[in-house]
Amino acid sequence: MTFYTPDISSGANWKGLERLIARLMLHQGWENIEVIGGTGDKGGDIIATRREVASSGLVTKSWVVQSKAVTGNRYIGPQAINEAISALSFYDTDVAVVATNGEFTRSAKKRQDELRANGFNVKLWNGAFLKQLIERMPEKSKAARDLRPYQSGIVKKVLAAFDGGESRAFYIVATGLGKTVIAATIAQNLWNRGLHRILVLCHATDLAFQLEQGFWPQLSKSVPTSVFFNGLPPRNSEGISFGLYQSLYGFLSGVRCKMKGSL
Image (cartoon, rainbow, N blue to C red; front, side, top):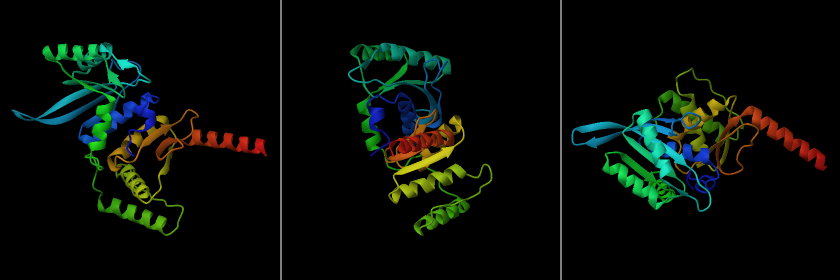
């Protein structure tokens, strides 16, 4: 199992594809990653930087990625590449990428060659490439953080409580001291102990996205993540689901009503 889940590889979850690419890049060592897809994104869905070795020494290059999810036998044509080039210009980046769960047309690959001949650094990542890259990646993310002693102490106490049969644990950490890193490390350790359905709740949509991305560095590639809100329930599959108290409460209330109606 990896975080390249069937709903993403099939094209059914286009937002999930954006976040998969962002997580892949983080796992492989890109930095300053932002998921920017949405209205007014100018053809860019993810921006990031990466340090690379050049003849002049170590240089930092900026990247912009255009994510395109497709279903069935649909292919990605040259228009997506043109959008990525527009994003490259708008965000003033060095590299433009079009990434898809599917495949590219011959005309798209021809357009890539034309742009490269004119000095544009354009890369095409198809579904097979994404799958192969993730399979070959190490389990541990390059962005993983070593815990500070106080963080490690909290993690050990929480896990000891769990191993001792406790169903609750509570810790308080001041702002900026790594609550998310601690929680993510606990989640990874619980996953290693066989808990493969984990729920993380908060009160706002933007915080749910923030928490998901904040967990990624501490998670192995075997741990899928997903988000839920706007009335949608958590995914009924293995992984860590991030969402809102409100959505979960509404979902459970609906389930209870259905159960009462069936009695």
